[in-house]
Amino acid sequence: MSEVASLNNFFDAIEVTYCTFEGETIQLKMPFTLTHTAEATRAPEDCGTAAPTNVISTSCSYNEAYLTPLYTARQCAEYAKLGLMGITVLYSSGDYGVAENGSYCLTSNGIYSLDNTIFNPSFVGTCPYITSVGATQANPNSAVYEPEGACGQVIYYGGGFSNYFAMPDYSRYLDRSGTSRGFPDTAANGTNFVVAIDDTYELICGTSCSSPVSGSILTIGFINLTIYSPSFAGVFNDIIMGGNQGCGIAAYTALPGIDPVTGLGTPNFPKLLASWLLLP
Image 1 (cartoon, one colour):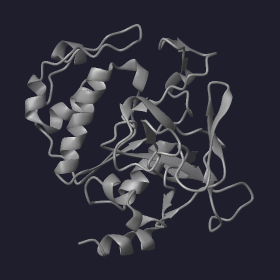
Image 2 (image 1 turned 135 degrees about the vertical axis):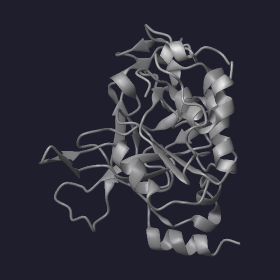
Image 3 (image 1 turned 90 degrees about the vertical axis):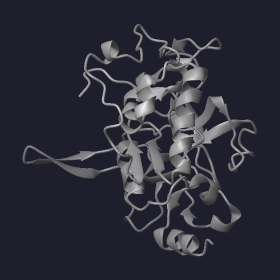
Image 4 (image 1 turned 45 degrees about the vertical axis):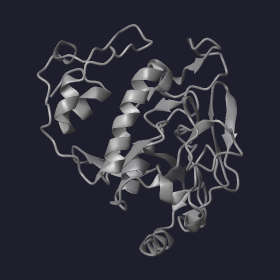
């Protein structure tokens, strides 16, 4: 296992030719640089040693602004290839609202700042060829059978609009931005998951919970083209409570219809399954 790894190592493992890809150095806009070499990872690379599964749920991310537009485009193209192979790829949308990892926002020239108000979206969640998953919660003093709200007790899940990627043709975010890829696409419960650690039980929260939960009901390839289509209207529970924050402000609010808080909403599995079975 590599001691230091990047997004490249995943593609190295599932696609042997990616190991020899000689693209640009991953210039992170931080006090360090990762290169696509064995020296950078300080361990031998695994090249084509793992077959991709039907569903891939990933709970890691970079700030989109850490990476160059060229690098993110190259990565995103690989996820498009996985979608064409019928593989579902889910990414958690992040846990720090619109400020994302480290709670940093951006200045007008893309410099990190704790006291500016330009939002800092997460990658790979902004890639239009994956399905980004946000988080919801059972509202305080409400039963689990009552409508949930956007997660905001412990985390503010990531959401908003990409600074790099254009709005894809399939998206219905048009009334929100008009030009940029909006995320997340969907959401699921992300609070109070019980885990056992050394014979003790703890509660955890995060989009790292909601993404794999969503993956457990999907085995059908790149789903965005379908779930945004008119024939799938109403198969997600619309979330209209809560919002995400960051950069010292309340950023977006969950509204009727699609929004950059919980996307289309949480899946209503019986309705989702019925609609999928009607597809040709």
